[in-house]
Length: 389
Ligand SMILES: *Cc1c(COP(=O)(O)O)cnc(C)c1O
Image 1 (tube, rainbow, N blue to C red):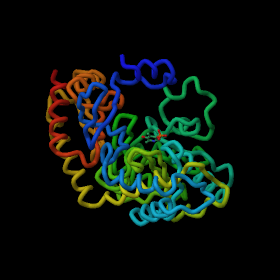
Image 2 (cartoon, rainbow, N blue to C red):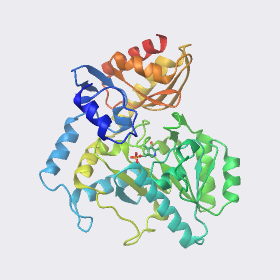
Image 3 (cartoon, helix red, strand yellow):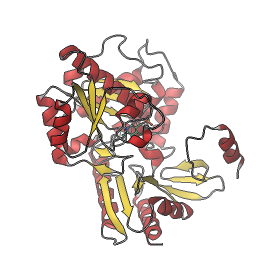
Image 4 (cartoon, rainbow, N blue to C red):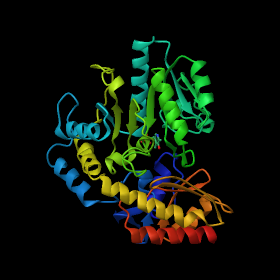
């Protein structure tokens, strides 16, 4: 084992079952380990490095800002934060943005907005948040509570109260759940990522949006993983033509630097007043400068390209008899091998120079949005061979 691996095992808290690879450098969709072995990166840091490793435009934006000012308190104005907020609102129709540092924090903000809106509009007892079974919303105690998977909850009791879970794709059950509680908001992912790359039914998504609107319930879409071009639309909810009240995102927006964003729609745009929420690092000028370079490039041409590459991957796997299912949208894809565990396929891929992710029993692919076709073809072939091996 290299020094890094030995030191890490001894001194870093044991929360990550790391793969036996140390990544030391990379460029675009290629990364290199401590021995100089090359890998095609089909995970992009769980959908974080949207334009790949050390992407030139992002690097330029980040280093230019680094040479100006790396941080100021949110007590002062800084240009990248203001500019990014404007860009996000113009591209989505949302009205205001709160910046934080991570996905969990972006969801915490959504929850606070929903609670305050409902408290003022309907009464403080309207505090319950409805989320879906098998969802994933983060690791803080409150977002863990929002997460609809019991195995994350064990041994961390008591969790934050005020969350109830209802099955995905069952509108009747959701309405029943809402009627049985005093509900502030509904939060859901358009594609359950950690839950196994499961896209919600379009009819369910539209039904929930309609019901939430009619009943003045705050609809929060967790786009931490699905956002920022990942599904071939700027945000995944745009695939279904709905208008959420709150959209939270993180992962891919920062291109590799920590950044969370919670976008507020018309209904809730003025819920927060001075002192209602805050973050020391949120809206950091360097993270925001990098994010502007990411969001600016998510134009129609790029999104069409994501859709084309998606189709290529779906077609490559969908008719294999060794593949039970292919799921997801855009470049957020889950492949369920019929006769092998996802962990076994991942291991073979790694040996053969492709880094994949898993989500439950699926191989999960989240390559950089601009992965070159040649790299994608090569990776697909290696993954196919691993499934057949
Ligand atoms: C990753 C993820 C989170 C948590 O994001 P962190 O940045 O790790 O806090 C929340 N929701 C979804 C849908 C995610 O995929």
